[in-house]
Image (cartoon, rainbow, N blue to C red):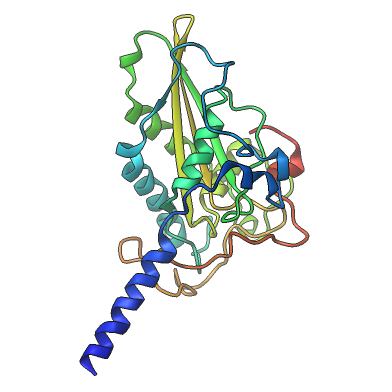
Length: 278
């Protein structure tokens, strides 16, 4: 009986880890047949090289050392909102995911910054993530390139994405309105989307005419959907989670299933509907 219990425990741990492992990129040709984007998909036959339109010297930033920092920033923010204690304008969340890094979503973010410009927004979809949401931003500064470290810029940009949290109306979390007052509300609500179980980020640097430019893009497991909720309410945080996370106690533990590979019938993404660059 003891051996049986050990086997069950090991199988449980294996299933949890398997469900939370970020998906790897698929062959580039497969991205051309995704139902949502088809051949408009940014990843369709895209090998991820820096485009010819970039300035000489443009280089990708190695993101390995920043993964933990970004993950902590995102999940700490989500946990505070989900608790219902830190922001009185927002209700506690019933089933908000703890986000984990995905190499596939990092790949999409890398394709985004490889263009060396972040507009217009491109369609992104994969067999694992039907609607890929994205937040991207450019930071430019003069002086010496070393005056601003990658860490400082990344931290500053990510913190700015959540700054509109106090502008979100409580009912908006249940029914995302078609028209938002400020563009950064889109960024903040995407960071709080309960179904965003995975994310990946990429960055690129280049210098031109005495200015230094830093492009950061983060791709997410889902996008905001018009008239859909950002997250479900509950009287107690994480009340509908299969398992609450041990560290972020108001969030669901990794491995919660949100069916992010499936289409939501009758709904459109926020960015596609507004036809506006963010």
